[in-house]
Image (cartoon, rainbow, N blue to C red; front, side, top):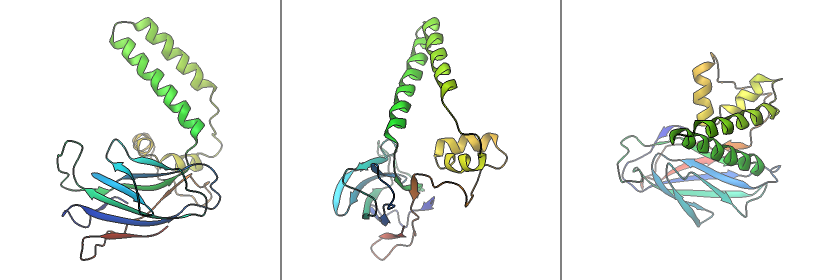
Length: 204
């Protein structure tokens, strides 16, 4: 991960082979941060565009044990056409999302943003009430604290959480064989192009 693109002569073709873990029973998604824009295809079928603001797609027909052939036609530019002079593949993951947790996250994010807007528009009392309600809700959420290493080894797989933990924890890179497997399988990319500029990732 975090490897430079094999070429800047875009579009660059990135290819991966992956297998959905056999014990996954829920929905399956693909998540990529390619360092630019791209077109994602799975098993020969176009899925959608990738960019810094749209990095994940759910695979409606994917299931445990299924083999996936993934291809990305990538360009080292952002949404406004500005070039990325050092494009890197920052993330390539299979994800088994918890839909209930995601729905809760969306609701809490919307409430937090509403409180921010109320405060910005001169309604501090309403903002404070909403913030207090959010605080009360968070205080009721059960958070496992018995195994810090296992919890943090999962948490740091999320980029935003990893940055926060790195700022407050002396040793935050917890790699424990005893840690429960996170519902995210990150694929490595070889970064070695062939003559066409294509780079193929190894089997997951």
